[in-house]
Image (cartoon, rainbow, N blue to C red; front, top):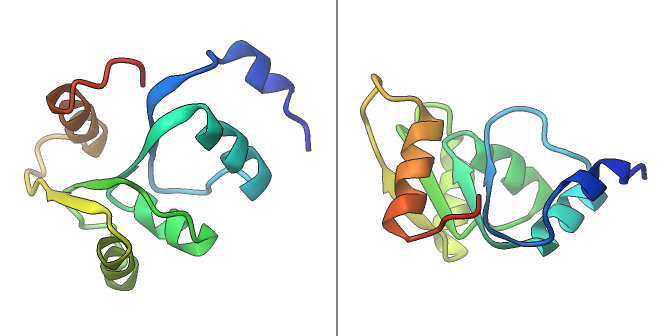
Length: 107
């Protein structure tokens, strides 16, 4: 696994945000997670985490891209679900708002 990109990242983060799409390979994901206190799935990001069997601390967004079984799995595994139905605001903004409310600064 090529991890040379990690040298440009800080050592520690309050949270790692995972959006919908193709996630990094499992080994890289594990390395990134070691640097973060919390894992937050943005809407359909929970789908990728479900496939990797990595439980997020939070799931936030309008949940329009979220697979229902992945959402049930996350909730049953202890993730806090934060539905934010506004379609006028992107999920990344909703995730950053959640981070602010949790007083997370290094994202």
